[in-house]
Image (cartoon, rainbow, N blue to C red):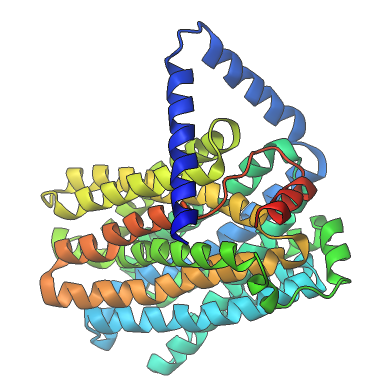
Length: 452
């Protein structure tokens, strides 16, 4: 493992030197020429069914993210209604993510067995139903049940859309198409924040979950537009879709470092983002509506991070190295956000920088993870090494930060539960193999078999 990490660091440092020398050469007009060619490459290939598929998957994924984000905005009012402490809210949120994450992996093996399209449709419909049931959930147990099932079926949308787009996208822009699906995350949070600003002050937290109705047009679009991919049809007949395949010889070297890195990444996301409305309430005195506007503004800026990271990972650096640097930058931004003075303007500026790097990293990770697994394990691999890892981090992140806030205050809680896990994740990603962009999926699988 140490030799693997040393090799990874060596390759990473070598690429840094090559890129630095290349960019220092005074070639007039070179950067502009490359950018124009890249844009032409995108526009020529982004058309027909791949474009239709991408737009439908983006909408379905954004609806799922909206349903997940509504809970975060409801937290201050939930605390007031049920008398929860920060630690108790963190534990409840963490429990639902942990249970939901386990269910996601089981459901995603069905996507490799019975098809991505079918499970995308199931996830979209079921997530809308269980999200809507928040409006009538009675007591803590009822909330935990409907929240867990919302997390599980919303989470199923992630591997289903990722696998579908990765298998249908043109190779030269596959990274951009799969990566830019991740703008569904800030779009979902933005939509939820706007709904929260309109609803919370007048009708309370339960009315938020009427937004689950967005799942209806999403499901209809999936039925009308999406078809099963050829690799999925072929792989489902081979019978190699079981989760144990992720740990066979050579495969575990991808699965375990990726799972650990994604878990650390999600610790920061869960502790810092999910509990952000509580931080804004406690430290800046924001009301629920003001918290919604703050989060919406920061996440809108974060969309630029997706575009920048996806572009760099597709046309300039390998995706692996882009992930490493972006995660490292997010850790630094998180540390700055945690220790700076608590004024509204400074908080918004540092939060926007944090979202730029933290959310942008996901635009590169999504296609990279899809490329690391063969077609018969693609949805299962995305679900285990990404979705389950993310849900595990989201399970522990709010609980850890909630407990740290009670003991040490918000600054130390965000440093330990936000910045530190990102620094660890950046190092863990170095253990994974860098892959050139623009290759056919079959070529990538052949490369990985030669050097697992």
